[in-house]
Image (cartoon, one colour):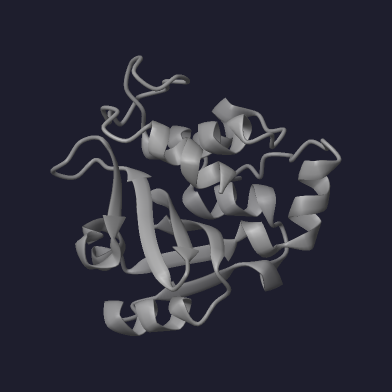
Length: 168
């Protein structure tokens, strides 16, 4: 519950493509920086700036750098994709899209899409799956359940550094 609580502290915080805020209520924040700040403030040892500047799949691979721990779907109809991820374990997921990165939180069968939205809202939002237009309209989706991955949790608990996966 720690990560979703931190995420919700940012609700309504203004979005900007170049936003690098580190504290709710100060400045603006881009989607990658939102994910990186939440992870850092939850105790994950990362280089916030380097992580935030990577493509979404590299952000995910920074935490789960083995192909069996993340899944890529392309050109999958939205209802089919939602049904598919609904069969995954409950927990906290990072989801990467064509040009966006966000969290999906699944708890008690309910899915929430929490992200710094560059869409109409232009702020950090907590949306139901029916209202998640960036998730719905993306042709590329990569997802990983970071809260159910033993290697991620062990590294987090031991305070080990997560090395940023960089695009070549």
